[in-house]
Length: 188
Image 1 (tube, rainbow, N blue to C red):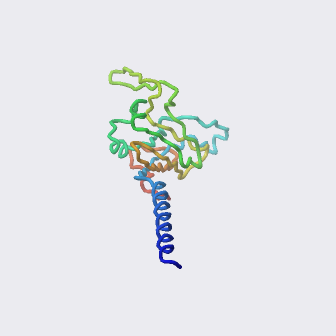
Image 2: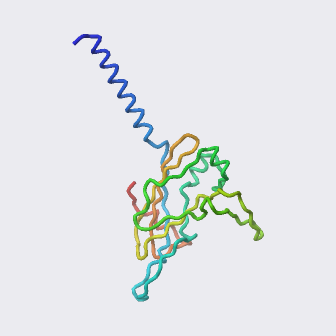
Image 3: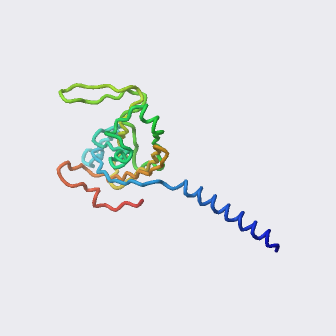
């Protein structure tokens, strides 16, 4: 084979490899955050009740955020109430990569509703439409106890983050004791 053709082929192959490597690198996350949350399984109907129970749609006690504190600090955000202008400036998006297997996730403050926050002294303050707290609730399937997980892709300031929220659905969350979830092993 001619030396020039061989050099040209090697150059083309290395260029193709570099393109593939860049493409696969773009698929990687800039950083991954994972945390664990005990979730109230109070929707479990004990056998002695022997009654059908409709699952609730929303619970503040089962709330969580796809924007953990460590990510908020990294994005230099104070609190998790993000006005539309800030979200737009950061090009902030939250997408579900993997929904939970044993329940539903709902937004506690959908963007089409006005977000209100409670202030000291029993007062409330309203935020502009489109403001969200990025707080969701996980409602496990009726009767389910055990592990579950939801995975999010967060894009902000030109970076891509993966957030893994592990859930341990227990009969009752203990506010005074240590998290039961922390001792569990979850596959990523």
